[in-house]
Length: 300
Image (cartoon, rainbow, N blue to C red):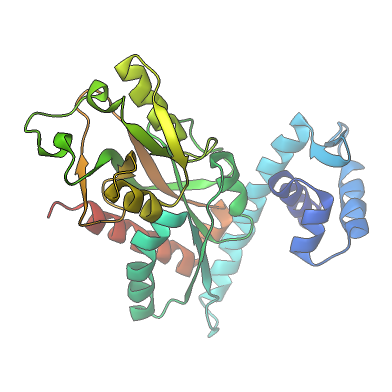
């Protein structure tokens, strides 16, 4: 087997099409197909299958792609060993994050990294939950989130926990429930109009948990993924919303109240390809992200 061929198989598993692999590697689709065909000749079981017009991995192909990640990690470790003897400028570290994590993490991360001479390049990526691991193909570190009781990330990515963040109910400051002394329950807020995220995104299931705890459905009047807009609508009396406690935006016209009878929240985690984390600068950025997370969650 050839390491280059294994890398292309891995890219196909992550990116989902020959065309996407070719674009990422700056080669032609024909070259991708030729490399895959050469790899297939060395393996006695099918590695790929047709899925409509796309080429997908078989179960054996998926297993070999996972092994290819181990090969890439070994090569990265060897390259890092050699790099220690070279006087070369480190490569920039590319970090992607969903919207609220970008707002909360990026300013402090960039400042801390610059103080250590690490060049961090940031981008925002707000995607459905199952698409976060695939972002690791194009970014060194990806800040992702998933519900507290959601499934774990696939073993193809290295995961660094950052936050276990509760979700609170955002209410207008002049709402009667915002002044109540006793803890709120799901039944207290279930009949309010709700501002929710789009279906398929990581926090959509949290509102379902509120409805289940209240034993009745909730009424969603607005769907949008941007917390600043959601909080602004809450302040205008347009409904209530579930907002992250530490990374959500503050608003003078909004009060955050926890729910006493339903445990809702999210994991915020840094994802990366295992071989990327072996780079000294990438590993350092992951450590800095943990430091920023500790500051965000520290009681004030």
